[in-house]
Length: 262
Figure 1 (cartoon, rainbow, N blue to C red):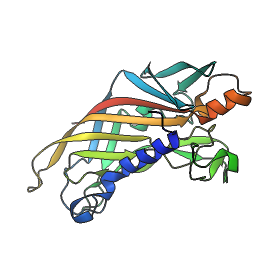
Figure 2 (tube, helix red, strand yellow; figure 1 turned 45 degrees about the vertical axis):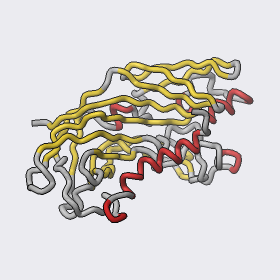
Figure 3 (cartoon, rainbow, N blue to C red; figure 1 turned 90 degrees about the vertical axis):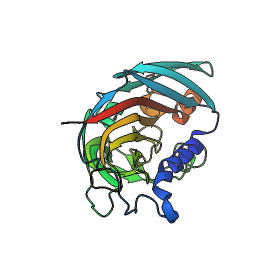
């Protein structure tokens, strides 16, 4: 619980990609040609009525909850009261219910690789230039451990097809939402641990042509941001407080279930 977020993010990414990299005879489901349940079509999504919030700052971990529409969480850390606000009306912010909207359309475009799926959901894009971060703003122990280029301008969202994978048994899917742009701690870019995943309930069987998904259960959407993006305090940060805020990460999680739209 007290590991640096860069390590947690790295482990989270490995965990998210694990279903893509493992499978029968060493071939992952991303390239699998085995049958998979039919998930194509329109799906309605029902969310939990709360957001679970995890804030990691200065080696400490704080847990809280918010209503589904977002709001402000305050923590006491290092002698400071630090508020973080999730404002879903901000165009650059992708909230959980936007990352996996209330109605989604899924496609399985390649009949030879039915474990691959596409969903049209919001994706963050950089409206300015991408620049190399300063040496003291990236590297091990920061939110940008690999010193990837960061957006030096406005970040906004557009609808785009995102790629997901159904695991080899056809029981679960994983869809990465973040890591498209690196964060500088201030810009509102989804961190790499941001993802949507759920269990798949189906009828029929792999041996027949009627293997069809009917419901998604035990679903979770997680979106994570650098603390500087969501800090609700004085924008003229300086000194110790600035360092704490820029080192923080804030993760919002909510559960969901889904059923086909008839």
